[in-house]
Image (cartoon, rainbow, N blue to C red; front, side, top):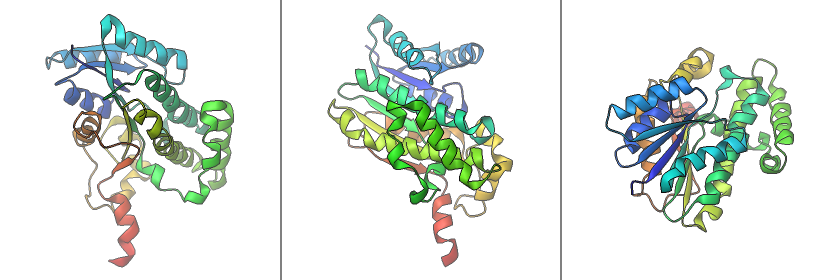
Length: 275
């Protein structure tokens, strides 16, 4: 039986490009909030001879996420891989909404898959290069477990910590903190996934030419190109190749880590004073 890959945010640039790659040997289940966009994505995938279905899912609602997986498993299908691309950028929401969608949403998807993960299973969480950009002393690692035990308190911590840099940067810092959480949370659950013979990895994209990426173009993203090694936005297909590889069966020893795919931006920031 063909194995299934669930892709959250699957109608977006990264998610859809990943679906086209994984769809070569997986049945695809696209999850998103907009039924119209889902229908179009499923139709487009079918045009490429990919077996695909769609499901409207709110990742901030655990019951909605549970229904997503139940739907994906109908008919005896086995969900082997999950690529969690759903999330929002600084220009798309307030700090509390950013914390809820990027943080709590990741917890919901991760826990729902962990409950049913088995040998050969893999979850790929999409983080961001922004999760690498904040000083570690500023990141509230001790409060991160609240995302599982007290989501409202977790949101308050992120919002309060992000406020330190002022109103103008509030959403951007909250975004960086939410993605630092995704990286931390992924690493923290490597053992739990490993005990089931499964893997969990995060991937941190830099600036990519997607609808979300374009929203940030005039809010700092273009500035990063000045120090990056590759002085252009990445293409959706380039990040999709990494996401699909991580979600594949070949890298069976890859787990509990983050892969930075930023065109050399972090490297450029680190070493710019030496050149």
